[in-house]
Length: 147
Image 1: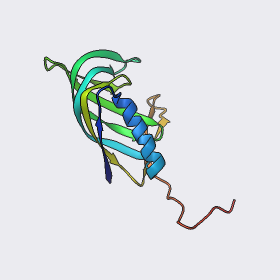
Image 2: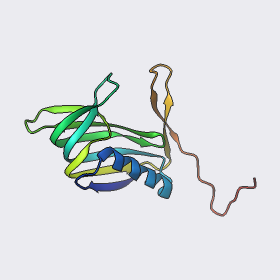
Image 3: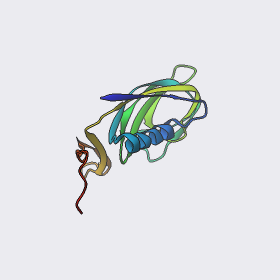
């Protein structure tokens, strides 16, 4: 396992930065699977989608990012967050676009070489669910396709 550490700046969209960062790591390092190991910070605004809801809910800040977990794969991210407001009230749900960093967000991402995360339709749930499998081995150095 390798790690990649990010420190996001005020105004960054947390989800967008994670998705762009994963796409860059996939392109430059051949990574096809990653997960969030740790994340803390503050948000000026957040959008969470609650269980069994189809749309996100705006949550005004300032907010503390208490926890972020989830997977990053070739077909997108599946992220959940817990946030606390100024009274200590905690809300949690699916992290959506629109979670804007207030002062900072510190995120540690575990890169999982040798694995591939995909999202495929699960007939039992009706949703695109995680499938994890060993990633295809890269071609040996010096070998070329004869096609």
